[in-house]
Length: 290
Image (cartoon, rainbow, N blue to C red; front, side):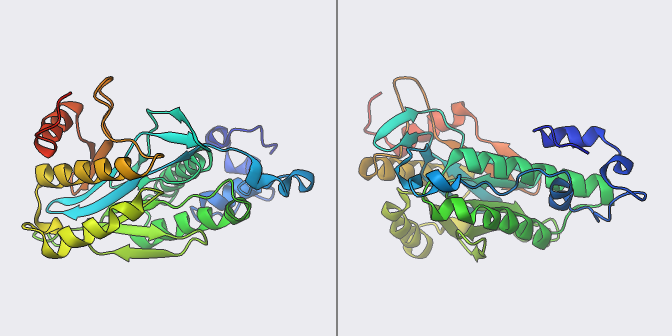
Protein backbone atom coordinates (compact mmCIF):
# COMPACT_ATOMS: atom_id res chain seq x y z
CA UNK A 1 0.00 0.00 0.00
CA UNK A 2 1.30 3.47 -0.84
CA UNK A 3 0.94 6.14 1.86
CA UNK A 4 -0.76 9.21 0.36
CA UNK A 5 -0.33 11.66 3.23
CA UNK A 6 -3.52 11.02 5.17
CA UNK A 7 -3.64 8.13 7.63
CA UNK A 8 -7.42 8.48 7.87
CA UNK A 9 -7.65 6.90 4.43
CA UNK A 10 -6.33 3.69 5.98
CA UNK A 11 -9.83 3.11 7.31
CA UNK A 12 -11.06 2.38 3.81
CA UNK A 13 -8.39 -0.17 3.06
CA UNK A 14 -8.83 -3.84 3.90
CA UNK A 15 -6.14 -5.68 5.81
CA UNK A 16 -5.52 -7.80 2.72
CA UNK A 17 -4.21 -4.65 1.03
CA UNK A 18 -2.00 -3.67 3.93
CA UNK A 19 0.08 -6.80 4.06
CA UNK A 20 0.83 -9.82 1.89
CA UNK A 21 -0.01 -13.39 2.85
CA UNK A 22 -3.40 -12.67 4.38
CA UNK A 23 -2.94 -9.61 6.59
CA UNK A 24 -0.82 -8.02 9.28
CA UNK A 25 -0.48 -9.21 12.87
CA UNK A 26 -1.47 -5.81 14.24
CA UNK A 27 -3.30 -6.92 17.42
CA UNK A 28 -5.11 -3.61 17.50
CA UNK A 29 -1.91 -1.53 17.49
CA UNK A 30 -2.62 1.49 15.32
CA UNK A 31 0.99 2.72 15.45
CA UNK A 32 2.24 -0.55 13.96
CA UNK A 33 -0.34 -0.17 11.22
CA UNK A 34 0.87 3.36 10.47
CA UNK A 35 4.48 2.19 10.35
CA UNK A 36 3.55 -0.56 7.91
CA UNK A 37 1.86 2.04 5.71
CA UNK A 38 5.07 4.15 5.97
CA UNK A 39 3.35 6.99 7.80
CA UNK A 40 6.12 9.29 9.14
CA UNK A 41 5.61 9.11 12.90
CA UNK A 42 9.06 10.56 13.53
CA UNK A 43 9.78 13.97 12.02
CA UNK A 44 13.33 15.26 11.74
CA UNK A 45 14.85 18.31 10.15
CA UNK A 46 17.16 17.80 7.16
CA UNK A 47 20.83 17.57 8.29
CA UNK A 48 21.74 20.85 6.61
CA UNK A 49 19.07 22.76 8.57
CA UNK A 50 19.00 20.79 11.83
CA UNK A 51 21.79 22.86 13.35
CA UNK A 52 19.67 25.99 12.88
CA UNK A 53 16.54 24.44 14.40
CA UNK A 54 16.65 26.50 17.57
CA UNK A 55 16.60 29.68 15.48
CA UNK A 56 13.29 28.81 13.80
CA UNK A 57 10.32 30.59 15.40
CA UNK A 58 7.63 27.96 15.95
CA UNK A 59 4.26 28.60 17.58
CA UNK A 60 4.10 27.57 21.23
CA UNK A 61 1.23 27.44 23.67
CA UNK A 62 0.89 27.78 27.46
CA UNK A 63 -0.48 27.44 30.27
CA UNK A 64 -2.44 24.27 31.09
CA UNK A 65 -3.63 22.92 34.42
CA UNK A 66 -5.65 19.97 35.74
CA UNK A 67 -7.15 19.47 39.20
CA UNK A 68 -8.88 16.53 40.79
CA UNK A 69 -12.25 17.74 42.07
CA UNK A 70 -15.28 16.03 43.62
CA UNK A 71 -16.69 14.48 40.44
CA UNK A 72 -13.51 13.73 38.50
CA UNK A 73 -10.92 15.93 36.79
CA UNK A 74 -11.22 19.51 35.57
CA UNK A 75 -8.64 20.29 32.91
CA UNK A 76 -8.05 23.74 31.46
CA UNK A 77 -5.85 25.89 29.29
CA UNK A 78 -5.50 29.49 28.27
CA UNK A 79 -6.01 30.41 24.60
CA UNK A 80 -2.79 32.21 23.58
CA UNK A 81 -0.24 30.90 21.08
CA UNK A 82 3.07 32.71 20.65
CA UNK A 83 6.09 32.59 18.35
CA UNK A 84 9.11 34.16 19.94
CA UNK A 85 7.91 37.46 21.39
CA UNK A 86 4.89 37.70 19.08
CA UNK A 87 1.31 36.75 19.91
CA UNK A 88 0.08 34.97 16.80
CA UNK A 89 -3.28 33.61 17.96
CA UNK A 90 -5.61 34.17 20.91
CA UNK A 91 -8.16 31.42 20.27
CA UNK A 92 -5.95 28.33 20.42
CA UNK A 93 -7.58 25.14 21.74
CA UNK A 94 -5.20 23.52 24.19
CA UNK A 95 -7.56 21.00 25.79
CA UNK A 96 -8.52 18.24 23.36
CA UNK A 97 -10.95 15.39 23.93
CA UNK A 98 -9.34 12.07 22.98
CA UNK A 99 -12.17 9.66 23.71
CA UNK A 100 -15.29 9.56 25.85
CA UNK A 101 -13.37 9.48 29.14
CA UNK A 102 -10.04 11.17 28.44
CA UNK A 103 -8.70 14.58 27.46
CA UNK A 104 -5.25 15.92 26.64
CA UNK A 105 -3.98 19.39 27.60
CA UNK A 106 -1.03 20.51 25.50
CA UNK A 107 1.89 22.83 26.12
CA UNK A 108 4.73 23.32 23.69
CA UNK A 109 4.46 23.13 19.92
CA UNK A 110 0.79 23.04 18.81
CA UNK A 111 1.66 21.59 15.38
CA UNK A 112 3.28 18.51 16.95
CA UNK A 113 0.78 18.31 19.82
CA UNK A 114 -2.27 18.34 17.53
CA UNK A 115 -0.78 15.53 15.45
CA UNK A 116 -0.04 13.50 18.58
CA UNK A 117 -3.61 14.04 19.78
CA UNK A 118 -5.04 13.06 16.38
CA UNK A 119 -3.05 9.83 16.23
CA UNK A 120 -3.86 9.04 19.86
CA UNK A 121 -7.60 9.51 19.25
CA UNK A 122 -7.58 7.19 16.23
CA UNK A 123 -5.38 4.67 18.05
CA UNK A 124 -8.04 4.30 20.74
CA UNK A 125 -10.79 4.04 18.13
CA UNK A 126 -8.86 1.48 16.10
CA UNK A 127 -8.22 -0.74 19.11
CA UNK A 128 -11.87 -0.57 20.18
CA UNK A 129 -13.18 -1.46 16.72
CA UNK A 130 -10.62 -4.15 15.89
CA UNK A 131 -10.48 -5.84 19.30
CA UNK A 132 -14.12 -5.18 20.29
CA UNK A 133 -13.08 -3.81 23.66
CA UNK A 134 -11.71 -0.63 25.18
CA UNK A 135 -7.97 -0.14 25.49
CA UNK A 136 -6.96 -0.43 29.13
CA UNK A 137 -5.93 2.62 31.13
CA UNK A 138 -2.32 1.43 31.17
CA UNK A 139 -2.47 0.83 27.43
CA UNK A 140 -3.66 4.40 26.85
CA UNK A 141 -0.83 5.79 28.97
CA UNK A 142 1.79 3.76 27.11
CA UNK A 143 0.40 4.73 23.72
CA UNK A 144 0.89 8.40 24.54
CA UNK A 145 4.37 7.63 25.90
CA UNK A 146 5.34 6.05 22.58
CA UNK A 147 4.15 9.06 20.60
CA UNK A 148 6.04 11.52 22.82
CA UNK A 149 9.19 9.40 22.65
CA UNK A 150 8.98 9.35 18.85
CA UNK A 151 9.12 13.16 18.98
CA UNK A 152 12.31 13.26 21.07
CA UNK A 153 14.56 14.38 18.20
CA UNK A 154 12.40 17.45 17.54
CA UNK A 155 12.28 18.26 21.26
CA UNK A 156 16.08 18.08 21.52
CA UNK A 157 16.39 20.44 18.55
CA UNK A 158 14.40 22.97 20.54
CA UNK A 159 11.50 23.51 18.16
CA UNK A 160 9.02 20.67 18.65
CA UNK A 161 8.80 19.83 22.32
CA UNK A 162 5.43 18.74 23.73
CA UNK A 163 4.79 18.32 27.47
CA UNK A 164 1.13 17.31 27.93
CA UNK A 165 -1.20 16.58 30.80
CA UNK A 166 -3.41 13.54 30.29
CA UNK A 167 -6.67 13.36 32.27
CA UNK A 168 -8.76 10.19 32.39
CA UNK A 169 -11.66 8.71 34.30
CA UNK A 170 -11.30 5.10 35.41
CA UNK A 171 -14.69 3.44 35.07
CA UNK A 172 -13.47 0.56 37.24
CA UNK A 173 -13.41 2.85 40.26
CA UNK A 174 -16.01 2.21 42.96
CA UNK A 175 -19.31 3.99 42.46
CA UNK A 176 -18.77 5.96 45.64
CA UNK A 177 -15.15 6.76 44.74
CA UNK A 178 -13.48 9.24 42.39
CA UNK A 179 -12.09 7.60 39.27
CA UNK A 180 -10.45 10.80 38.03
CA UNK A 181 -6.75 10.46 37.25
CA UNK A 182 -4.14 13.02 36.18
CA UNK A 183 -0.88 12.08 34.47
CA UNK A 184 2.10 14.28 33.67
CA UNK A 185 4.64 13.38 30.97
CA UNK A 186 8.26 14.35 30.41
CA UNK A 187 9.99 14.76 27.02
CA UNK A 188 11.13 11.11 27.05
CA UNK A 189 7.58 9.81 27.42
CA UNK A 190 7.76 8.80 31.08
CA UNK A 191 4.44 9.32 32.83
CA UNK A 192 3.77 10.17 36.46
CA UNK A 193 0.42 10.17 38.22
CA UNK A 194 -0.36 13.38 40.08
CA UNK A 195 -2.70 12.89 43.01
CA UNK A 196 -4.38 16.30 43.23
CA UNK A 197 -3.18 18.55 40.40
CA UNK A 198 -0.75 19.10 37.54
CA UNK A 199 0.33 22.13 35.55
CA UNK A 200 2.79 22.72 32.73
CA UNK A 201 3.79 25.44 30.30
CA UNK A 202 5.71 28.67 30.74
CA UNK A 203 3.14 30.11 33.16
CA UNK A 204 3.06 27.02 35.38
CA UNK A 205 5.91 28.22 37.58
CA UNK A 206 3.69 31.02 38.88
CA UNK A 207 0.77 28.83 39.91
CA UNK A 208 2.28 25.51 41.03
CA UNK A 209 2.87 26.81 44.54
CA UNK A 210 -0.65 28.22 44.71
CA UNK A 211 -2.05 24.84 43.72
CA UNK A 212 -0.04 23.18 46.46
CA UNK A 213 -1.33 25.71 48.98
CA UNK A 214 -4.95 25.21 47.92
CA UNK A 215 -4.56 21.44 47.99
CA UNK A 216 -3.07 21.33 51.47
CA UNK A 217 -4.20 24.44 53.33
CA UNK A 218 -7.20 25.82 51.42
CA UNK A 219 -10.54 26.30 53.12
CA UNK A 220 -11.87 23.62 50.77
CA UNK A 221 -9.36 21.06 49.49
CA UNK A 222 -9.18 20.72 45.70
CA UNK A 223 -10.51 17.16 45.71
CA UNK A 224 -13.53 18.27 47.77
CA UNK A 225 -14.53 21.17 45.48
CA UNK A 226 -17.64 21.02 43.33
CA UNK A 227 -17.54 22.03 39.66
CA UNK A 228 -18.20 25.71 40.36
CA UNK A 229 -15.52 25.97 43.05
CA UNK A 230 -12.93 24.16 40.92
CA UNK A 231 -13.68 26.37 37.92
CA UNK A 232 -13.35 29.58 39.96
CA UNK A 233 -10.01 28.37 41.36
CA UNK A 234 -8.70 27.57 37.88
CA UNK A 235 -9.87 30.89 36.41
CA UNK A 236 -8.02 32.71 39.18
CA UNK A 237 -4.89 30.63 38.61
CA UNK A 238 -4.83 31.32 34.88
CA UNK A 239 -5.36 35.01 35.60
CA UNK A 240 -2.34 34.95 37.93
CA UNK A 241 -0.24 33.20 35.26
CA UNK A 242 -1.24 35.79 32.66
CA UNK A 243 -0.06 38.61 34.92
CA UNK A 244 3.50 37.25 35.06
CA UNK A 245 3.87 35.27 31.82
CA UNK A 246 3.49 37.10 28.50
CA UNK A 247 2.80 33.82 26.68
CA UNK A 248 -0.32 33.15 28.77
CA UNK A 249 -3.65 34.90 28.33
CA UNK A 250 -6.43 35.19 30.85
CA UNK A 251 -10.00 36.20 30.09
CA UNK A 252 -10.22 38.69 27.21
CA UNK A 253 -13.21 40.86 28.16
CA UNK A 254 -13.19 42.89 24.93
CA UNK A 255 -13.99 39.94 22.67
CA UNK A 256 -15.31 37.49 25.29
CA UNK A 257 -12.52 34.90 24.95
CA UNK A 258 -12.49 32.59 27.95
CA UNK A 259 -9.98 29.88 28.81
CA UNK A 260 -11.05 26.37 27.81
CA UNK A 261 -12.32 24.25 30.69
CA UNK A 262 -13.41 20.62 30.37
CA UNK A 263 -14.55 18.09 32.93
CA UNK A 264 -13.69 14.39 32.77
CA UNK A 265 -16.19 12.43 34.87
CA UNK A 266 -17.99 9.10 34.93
CA UNK A 267 -20.51 10.50 32.43
CA UNK A 268 -17.78 11.51 29.97
CA UNK A 269 -15.89 14.60 28.80
CA UNK A 270 -17.87 17.85 28.83
CA UNK A 271 -16.94 21.43 27.97
CA UNK A 272 -17.87 24.14 30.46
CA UNK A 273 -20.09 26.65 28.66
CA UNK A 274 -19.16 30.31 28.15
CA UNK A 275 -22.29 31.31 30.09
CA UNK A 276 -21.11 29.38 33.13
CA UNK A 277 -17.58 30.74 32.71
CA UNK A 278 -18.89 34.31 32.55
CA UNK A 279 -20.86 33.86 35.77
CA UNK A 280 -17.99 32.15 37.56
CA UNK A 281 -15.44 34.68 36.33
CA UNK A 282 -17.57 37.44 37.86
CA UNK A 283 -17.31 35.56 41.16
CA UNK A 284 -13.59 34.91 40.69
CA UNK A 285 -12.84 38.60 40.00
CA UNK A 286 -15.60 40.54 41.80
CA UNK A 287 -13.82 43.90 41.58
CA UNK A 288 -12.91 43.72 37.88
CA UNK A 289 -15.01 45.78 35.52
CA UNK A 290 -15.29 44.63 31.89
